[in-house]
Image 1 (cartoon, rainbow, N blue to C red):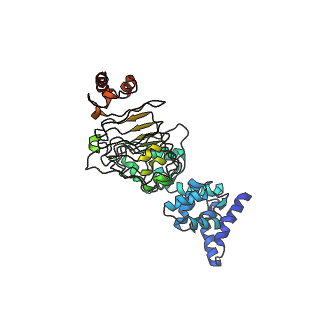
Image 2: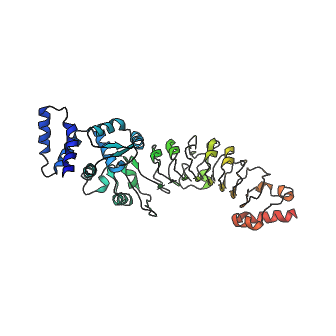
Image 3: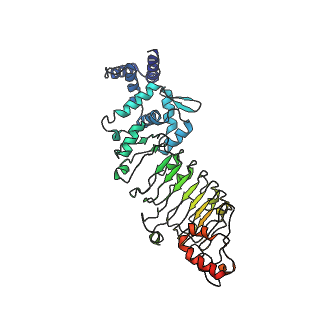
Length: 409
């Protein structure tokens, strides 16, 4: 009881400070309007109502999503939502709504519960009409049942380990137009052909590790995507202006090239990058792609570039590299020594005399069909790898290769 009284005085005191006798009388009258509420709730309600609308939003966001979080990180997130967090946080501290300890935001449990109740009262019967969803079960229900509305502004979703949230293609997902931020580690919207853009401020999702946007109508990668420093997997396959199109369609000059960020320097954790069938043109891939030193799998099949950045040779952890059906590709860059599998099927413009050589852990193979002839390179330079290895990975070329082996003898 003593704690409640102290909290009431702490919150109401700063609000009454400097007010005239008449103003204080009006505030006391306001307190009496809610006789069924606990005294502390009445005091909190009066003080809360004295905040401007933007500060109220910041207060609710802290209570629902950011209690115990780093102050600097929270400010960056709120700034991306066009708030003025510096001013709002200052007011909330002065009113004793929040405190700062070790650069983290804190508030009393009773204050947090008060804010939660404010949000619940926005829509008692329909969860999808509440502005904020912080409860795991509530968030899952709204997302899985597509019950979200334009009232939803923020979602905090912490899935237990090994639990996944399945979201399929639904128009209802697009109705949460005010949604400002979530706490995500894995975002999979593949196949959602109605989604045509990612939020420009997606870079605030600092915990995001996987982003799969394959086969969507997304036409460009947001510039802030390079701030996803923990991102390990990034997939934009078939994001070329023709969702679900065939490789031949995706190579059409009438399609739109998928714009990439000018630099990959912020994506230092990336291990898998898939940009197949994005209609990428010459010079579309950033020259500094070599900075992705943890990258293990690079998928670039079905695009329109004629060459690739030389810095690919700096991808020291690269294991798999695919440029299948890149019909304008004239040459490959020097590849790292650790590459185990290279796929370059249906690349008719590749130079005739491409070198094939084994590595310690596997081998490299390049489809050089233009060279398969009696007087070609294979006649004088047989493939230095077992035929059965080629058959496993490239069965449709085995007949041609067998012919080449017989010609070489």
